[in-house]
Length: 411
Image 1 (cartoon, one colour):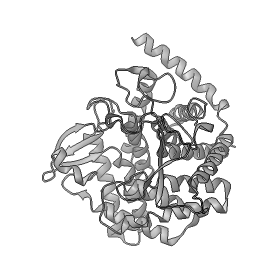
Image 2 (image 1 turned 90 degrees about the vertical axis):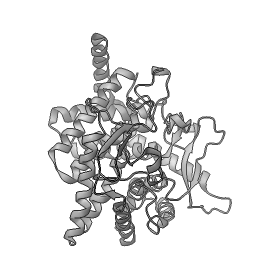
Image 3 (image 1 turned 180 degrees about the vertical axis):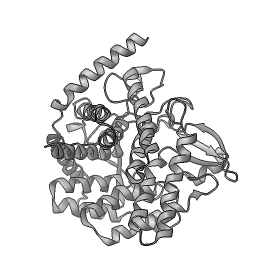
C-alpha cells in the first residue's frame, strides 16, 4: 500500500511540474469574460432590463437550457453574493462600463441584508463577495457602510461562553446546542475587515478582532481530528461552552473528509493568518493543506477531488470542482507566506489545479454559460450533484486573478 501511494505521489508531482506551461492565465480570463457576456444575454429580459433580485445559483446536469437557474436574493440564499462578485472581478479585467452597471445592480439587490437581524453566519459570504469586491473597485462609501453594518449584525451571533459564531440559529434544537460549521471560517474575514476599518474606535475594533481570533482558535481546538481533517459541524453546550461532538451535515460520514469542508479550512486559516500574523494560524493552515493534498493524491486521478474523499465508490463518486477552486485560490495566497520550498509546492499544486479545471474535462464552454462543470453541492440531500454552481465559478475566477498577479510580480 505504501509503495502504491508513493508511486501515485511521484506521478502527481511530475504532472504538477508540467502544468505551469499548460495554464494560460490570460486565455482563461478571456474565456471567463466571454462566458459572463453569454450569461448576461441569457439573464436579460425581453425588454432589455434585468431582474437584479434574481441571482444565478446553478445549472444542473440534466438541464436543457444553457442559462443559470436563479434564486431570489435574500438572507436565506447564501449564494446571492457570488454572481455580483464575478461581475466585479470581470470588470477589473475588462473595465467594461456595462459590466460595472450590472455588477452594481446585482450588488445593490442585496441591500436588505443589513436591514434585519442576522438570519445566520452567511453575511460574510453574502457581502464580502458583492459589496466587498465592489468597494475594492470603486471605494464607494455606501458599500463600505453596508459591510460595516453586516459585520455588526454577524457579531450578534457570537457566543461568549463558546467563543465562536453561531452558524445556524434555526438548527440549535436539532443539534442540541450551539452549532458552528467549517464554512463559517470564511465569514471571519468580515469581522477582521471591519476591525481594520474602525481602528479609530479602539474598543469596537478590538472586540470584532477578538471575536474572529477566538472563533479561529476554538475551531482549531475542537473541529479537527488528529490528522487535521475537519468535521463539518461542531456542537457546543450553549450555556457552558463545552464541546459536545463533531459531525457532518453535507459530507459522507461524520468521520470522512468532505472535500469542500476541508477547502474552507484551508482558505479560512490562510485568511486568518493574513489579518492576525499569528504563527499558530500559519502552521495550522499548512497542516490542513498538507492532509488535503495527501488525501487528494491517494483518492483522485487528477487535481480535482471527489466530493468526499472517503466515499466508498472511489472514482465512481462525483467530483467537486468547487473545492478545487477554493483550494487553488487559497494556495496562491498561502504560498507567499511559507518558506520558499514549501511555497513552491503549494504554488505548483495551485497551478496544477487550475490547469485541470481549465481543461475540456471541467470547463463548460459551449455546454452552458457557467465557467465550470462537475461541482457537488449537498450530496446527502441529493442537491446540485455534478452541476455547474456559481461559487465554483467565483473562486475559479479569483484564483486565476491571483495567479495573474503572482506572475506579474515575478516578472
